[in-house]
Length: 200
Image (tube, rainbow, N blue to C red; front, side):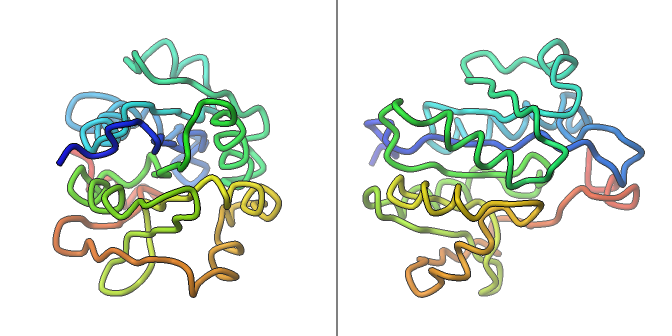
């Protein structure tokens, strides 16, 4: 079966972080397998079945545009990126308004251990605009997360600081479909110098 044949689910990649704990190196530009991390993450979304991918940029956005190949992606600038992930999530969801997308599959640029297999599982759980799906690792909710468009206003209203959609998901925990992905992915983040060992 072809995943997402009508393009109802858009990929939304949050890649605006400034890498404060990495000496101010934007995570989007960290190298992984010979190319910037943001390229790797965008390719994963495409390979999993997201024909439309919106990438939210922030820290050194001009450098990211210049030094990466994100052809075919919609690049969304978030001037308020320093406020935290919440502002990037709001900017990304706003950019999808009017595109025909009925859900957003949200992934983070600094999780290269989460590949196509996990993203595809979450995408396969999409039903309609009321869908609320999350990858889980040994039963613990993680990324990527799929938000049906019916949830976007509520998420945008509560996404502040570095919390992202955490408050909204807590409030709607009973409605979230968890998709176990621990057998195909590792949900580590690239946050500190020590975490750079995960990059190849």
